[in-house]
Length: 362
Image (cartoon, rainbow, N blue to C red; front, top):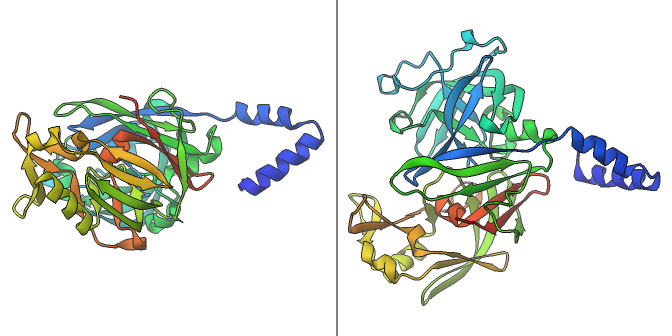
């Protein structure tokens, strides 16, 4: 129900003395739930979902930078994907065939196949939707097959960027949630693979996130896109009207080359064309200042250990967690990936079309 209509209804019921009764009955049917994610060496975070009846488990990336759900289908015959779990529609009593072809392109590569419909549950959150349309992929980029614990992607972006106009899972679940939002907290575990984060659907995460939340409006209901106006690093400072997206599916910061070059210069990092990274001695982390972004007039400080990481365990050679991008689709010129989200919980407020930031507890 649109928020304007909700407010009008509230006023009408208050005049009749029935608002509290209505609210209690309405809230009784609403839910919230948390879904833990596994940290794969601080590079990507995946969670287990269930599809079908009985449930078939898949470890997927919960991705705010896209809006479609896909998993490999049993018709996928790529040798490199042989060990991946495959969805078998013949084993699900709730599956409904669709058959429409599907194709999507990510920065890491493509995925293609066809659409189907079945029951979706978000892991231990116990949140389920019985008629979720999703893609059954027959061909996916090799990188997706090579990644440990990576079986697919569940998009948490807005419907406007959904391929084939498929309604994303969060929009399908929205009417059942206590609050029209979800909260993301990510932790750091380094070169280990273990549970290290939580996606909270329909509620704020009051355990892992500070109570002080600063919200900014979305620039557009496409990606989780917002404006920011400043970057500083030591003696370097730059102001501009930039547009960024919050992307749980990106391991680094992506941004404007002049700014990243200035940060690299300040830290002594040099771009390696062979590795495609800005490299520097790990000893630089001890004295490197924080990077400070100005969002909605508020400073957000990113410590050196979030943007300077070792090449390997025990390595003396490090790299900056930055890559350069141009002013691509929708005018976006920055991507705030996992280093930002580990530092600040991100609150994705679908109902008020805004995004909030709260200091993360670790």
